[in-house]
Amino acid sequence: MKFFKKYFRNNFQKTIKNILGFASSNKMSIPNRYKSLLNRTLPTFLPEPDSVESYLKQLDINTVTCVNYAHRRLGVFPEFIVTLVYLQELGISFNQITSLPESICNLSSLSVLYCQYNKLTSLPESICHLSSLSVLICNDNRLKSLPESIGSLSSLEEFNINFNQLIDLPESIGSLNNLKLLYCSNNQLVSLPDSIRSLSSLDEFDISYNQFISLPNSIGSLNNLKEFYCENNQLTSLPESICNLSGLTTLFCCNNKLKCFPDSICNLSDLTTLFCNDNQLESLPDLINLEEILYNNNPLTKLPKSFHFVIKNSKIQAHLHKEYIKIKRTLCKQLIIDLDVVSVVLDFF
Image 1 (tube, rainbow, N blue to C red):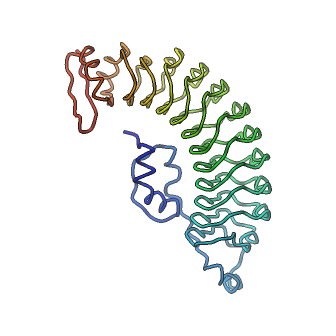
Image 2 (cartoon, rainbow, N blue to C red):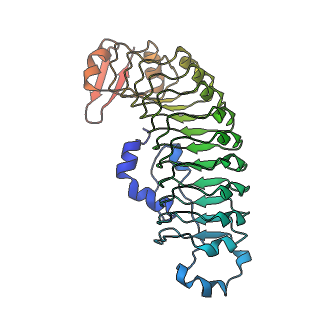
Image 3 (cartoon, helix red, strand yellow):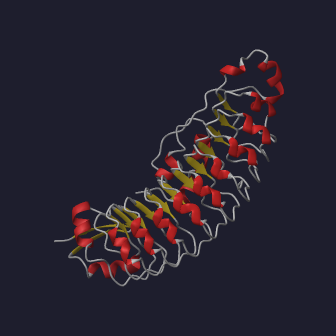
């Protein structure tokens, strides 16, 4: 069973904060979109900012490649950091920093930047000159916009801007040819730039908890996409082009206003996980390779004919609401229900 965002947000927050703050924590099973944030440690710790000057006198700055200033209650960015020209990884998360200096572009070797959980309202344009930057984590800030030249980050592979105040994404984002992970949930996005079609390397895309009413057909051009999360929006339909995502394995589209799926979705033979609960669906797609599906709180009138094959061969775990029990009884000879865990096992003969 994949990890629910609501549970993750409300009950796992402290654990994740420790992990993102580079502290040790027990591993837990969570969606792949969060796994990439685990087990990242920045081993080099510098002293408190007020003692930096004396510390630097004893330090060869050419040897400093990794700095962690997480959880230091900083209100401003420590200016001395931009003098560490060989710095490769920088962590300043869980502080109260309101801005990053334009001089951050001096860190030409920087490949990883963690600046989540601060009070950033924008990113400096100069950050786009960091040609070696491959990981940029700036979720849980107050970002209202991104630099227009963000597409210049040619090495960027992971970009996390979850939990900000973004209303749009710059057109140049389509130039991030190496981008594999793009997380922009919990913002105020209403549309995607047409250039999104150019993100041919994208593996995971999260636009959940925004204000989308529809999605562009350009979504179908993301040929390498494996996981797509668009739950908790105002979507009334999914684009027909979604059938072009031949490698898609995971689709979260719950808590929208979907009335039906496009017929072409049945062509997604690699799709193994579908969460479509809390919509307005009257039927479900015929997807014979499903291993997990959540579809409660929909006005279903029928289930796919292939469900008997799926359940018998994959022992699929389906999650039901009480009101649908009668529907299931008409489709199988034996039904075992455990209302405590809200799961069923259907045994077809």
